[in-house]
Structures are given as C-alpha cells and as structure tokens.
Length: 357
Image 1 (cartoon, rainbow, N blue to C red):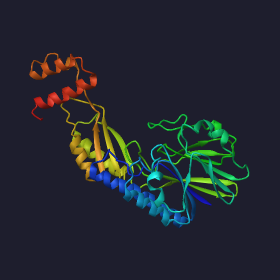
Image 2 (cartoon, helix red, strand yellow; image 1 turned 90 degrees about the horizontal axis):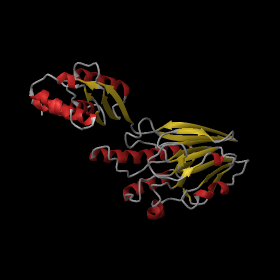
Image 3 (tube, rainbow, N blue to C red; image 1 turned 120 degrees about the vertical axis):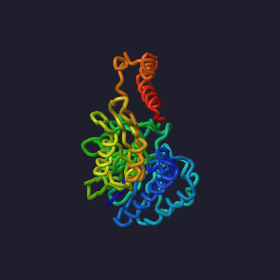
Image 4 (cartoon, rainbow, N blue to C red; image 1 turned 180 degrees about the horizontal axis):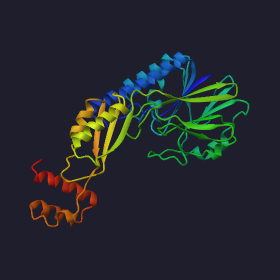
C-alpha cells in the first residue's frame, strides 16, 4: 500500500521576498505542485495522502485556490485525502468544507483512525485543551501497521511560529511504525523507539530563502508489517543562496564574472537565488551589487544580492592625510557609531567625494 505524507503547502501565501509579479507566479506554481501531487497519487496507485497541517497559509483563502484544491482532490477519486489542520489553516473547513468531495477526510481534536486492511492511520489536531491528554488517550493495536499524524513542534527543533509541542519520549512503546509530522519546512527524520520512526516531510515547494534546497514529500510503502519510506523531490523550483568573499580580488567585475560562472554551474536557471557578498575590501574597491543582480536576473527566475562586505579602513591610514577625505574618515572613525555603521558611512562618503554618487 502506498501513502503520501505531505504538509505545509501554505497555499495563498503572500511570498513577500519576491516582487509582486513573481510572487503571483510563485503562488500559482505552489498550488500547481499540489495538483501534480494529486496526479502522481492517481497514476501511482496511492491509497491515501496525509496532509499533516498548514495546507493553507491563513484564514483568508481565495475562491480560486479553494476551488482548484477541491478539484484536484476530486480528480484522484481512488485516493483518500486525510487532512489535519495546522496552526495556520484552522478556519479553512469552516469556509469551504461544503465544496470538498467525499474522499477528503478530516482528523479532528480527538484521535481519529482510518483503516485500510491492516494499516491504521490515526491523527489528531492539537490544541491547548487536548495537548495534555493526547499521549494517554492514544490507543493503537499492536498487530496493525500504525501510522500516526500530528502537527506541531518536536522539542529540540527550531521554529519561528507558535505551535503545540510534541514529545517523542511520550510516544515510545505506543506501537507507532511511522509518525507523520507537519510544521517544520525541511525534511528530517528520527527514531521513536525500536519499532517506529518519525519524520517531518517539509514543505513540498519553497516560498523564501528560509526554505532553500530541494523540497518534496515522503512516500510510505507498507507490505505486511514492513514500512518503507522515501523522500521524493517534487518542487517546481528551488530557493538557493551562496556566499562569495571579495577578499583577494583587485576588480569587482572580475569577481562578478567568476560568480556568474560558478552560479551557472551550481544552480539550474529556473532557481530563485541569493548571493551574499562578504569579506573586507579597500575603500577604492567598488562593490557594484546592482550590476551583479542585473546580470544574475538574466539567468534566473529571480535573483537578489546582499552586500555584507566591510571597508578596510584604519585611522593610521588617514592620520596624516590633510585632504577633505582624511578629515572625513578621521571624523567618522572617532564618532560613537557602531563599527558596521562607520564602515557604511565611510564607503558612501568616499564614493561621494569621488563624485560617484
């Protein structure tokens, strides 16, 4: 029996890291990724697709998105969609529950089980009321293959969004073969006990530079009491970032060409990329991040460049410089500004004195 474990699609997300036109395209791509997953389920004989929370990004879901979501579910009529609301999408069912087909099934705030021969898929939507009791209330049959679904924060994982916590130690010896988790947006897995393991499938398609790399879903295959899992790459494009140091380069434009060549060899043209420039450079070294971004955007869906370089300036270099430039640098270095702000002010000021601004 084949089962898909997915989560955290965050459909209708704003995707603020991209310009408006690119953000609109990206939102549609992520929705289409779900449609492709439904087609994959239909073509591959997947019996159930677990959606372990945050299928949507908030309470406001457009009619277009809800309609396409429902049609995609309906198109895979032989696959059951087992939906667990997360901390972002609890209002979706209240708004659009009536348009969802019969093969869309829900885990509520009590343990609910859907059985397929000897495979039991059990899940619960955590909240502040049931969280203290979920472990004692979980009752599984030792002789069944048990897949459990939850959405929340496993203790020890970093996350910025508030979510209920999940204790792996309290799930030991519960006869769990696979714990399908949602909330963390990158794939990871670990061990519950001698019998079972847990996994975050991650999001199926990235939305920002905090979701870099290849994304996809987990394919679960059960045979008898054996459970085999595989991460399946499935994203439409990736977010990627890479750092480059300006140290040792005499010309920024020579460095620019090296960066472009290296990026082309590393990341596919459909990628969304960020280049971070680091290291120290002389005051006369021109860092033209706008030109680099322009060239990269010729090669990629979208590219941005961050300049985190610092100007290599010391007071002794300008101690005896009686020019306006020397007076300016000494004044900035003697100020109470932070080192980061001093570097930024000196860089802009020297460029202005050279007539480049």
